[in-house]
Image 1 (tube, rainbow, N blue to C red):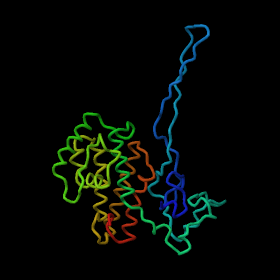
Image 2 (cartoon, one colour):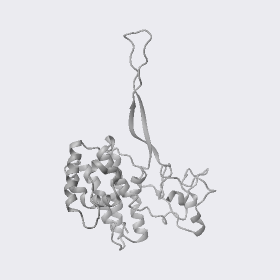
Image 3 (tube, rainbow, N blue to C red):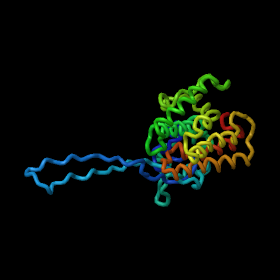
Image 4 (spheres, helix red, strand yellow):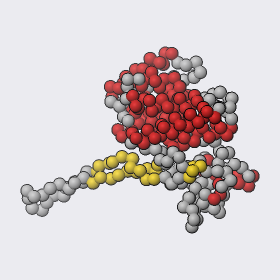
Length: 271
């Protein structure tokens, strides 16, 4: 929706980041091996050998720089490809956003909200833990243990939420926002303690730590010290994801920009 309103590159484009100037890179997502059948020889021979399987590398556009130059409101309409500038953030200079006619802040005026950024990225990480080999999938018996913990916590649901968190093996792709919030704030550590490797769990715990530093549901302004510390933890989360070999998709990259709106609008991240 922001792409449509701002008339910019969509989330899958090379220059898609709304807050910093960097060209995304095609990065290997995983290797898919496709078997090639051996053709039947006309004359049987002991020298006939099967063709080697072909390896097809699947890639995705990833935004891997956590310290790129920020975009600004004043320079928004210079982010268009030219002889001097390779940036293609604005794909068509003859189809500009109607918001430009009212002198709207085209960078800071559009919030990168936590619900459609952090919680979606968190959900994708949970999918990796439960079912994707190259993104931290755990063994079946460990997943069953995590499900047993969630079944136990179903009986002592937090009062702030109407829903309980369903078992990961059955509903990880369909978790509602309230489930993801409850999981992140309350259940992440007790469910995954001694189930995830320590470095994996420590990495995931950076997310609730950052959200609490950014004020969570508190409507009061967040101090610069706390927002700066939250930015460090979110950048650390992304950098460690790179070390694990996990993809840095559009939403994962956008985590590092969440504190900017907390500072700009002087309120907790959830409000």
